Length: 241
Length: 255
Image 1 (tube, rainbow over the protein chains, first blue to last red):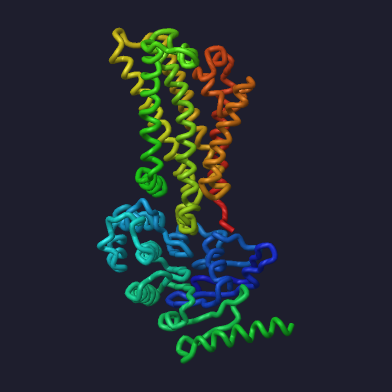
Image 2: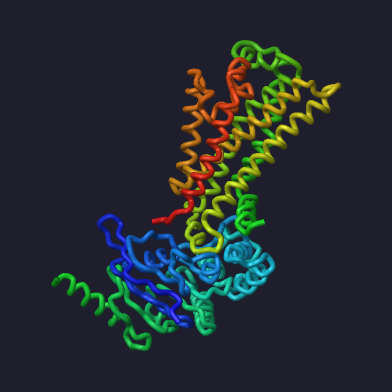
């Protein structure tokens, strides 16, 4: 079953085209990774799904509902981490996760329970009662990830989630993504790290010039070579036309 | 209580702006009113100071204290509330936390309304406490308590200072519209300066940010009598419009 479907997304900033007829979908229980260079349109795509970006045109369906019609019950099942973490510097690590869970509709008691679970999963226990302002960039990233996972979403949207994470943090994140996908969550994740993506993704789409230009086989030997070959082929085709 | 209100309160009570603005608004006005009247009536003042403090030698001690409290409380409430809402709204953009507030069961409109509610309750609590301290000091220090006229002044200052504080909420719109607190801080300075100029040329009654303060005696007794209910209603309407504009401006895409 399709958890997220986008079709014909277009967005331009003046003369700069960020999304150019973008089509993409993510199935329940699937990790769909999107890879691309800086400025390819990955973050704009994710921002448009959650409403940060106002599209020029296009259709977005979230958990079976037209995006414009999504209400509380739909958004309660969506988790996202796009560019910046949910991490208020004046709140403690645990308070941040509790706040995110409560804003996703959990009661105070349930929010406290899941906060403990995810603070522990991302090995933030030592800093649980410390204000987020005192954390390193990597641990702030872990707080943001805890906030995205805390309410057991059916659709997870993660933009460059391994940014600033140390190798241990990357492993914890990988476990969390795979575990969520195995329990039916649809995961859309962007990354620059092709090796990392290959370890967790069921599908890899290459985003370039605001559109999906092809797919990579997660099990292929040399993803980097295939990635750049696809980009160069696309650019050559554009120049030729 | 809604989740948005709980979380906005949690963030606000931990904030530096709350820790600075609260004592400023609660302690400075009573201290100024008591100190100014004491100086006016006991110190041997000469020159411009004597002229400035002359109004605090008129009427009873309590009446003079209420006049001073009204003058300072109105100004401090406006500026302090302005800074508070500038931070409450602007910080989401400056700290890049705004992105996490999209695609939630709690709408951006609810979050913005919670911010306005927290700020409004804080204004009323601080103004009431500041005025209560001033009244308590007078009740305890003056035999016979407050005169009827003094109580009337207390009521006037309470309404005027709350209106001025709530007028500070309108700067939330600037913070949301300019997506940061610097624009709002600049507008507080600008509005304060322009209001002073308009008040000095005699049209202060028609300036929403001036009318309540004038009514409380900031421009003298004569100017206070010129303020009618319509002027105060204009200020109240401006508060409501500003709050709605802030909520509307917060509830929009980033790009």
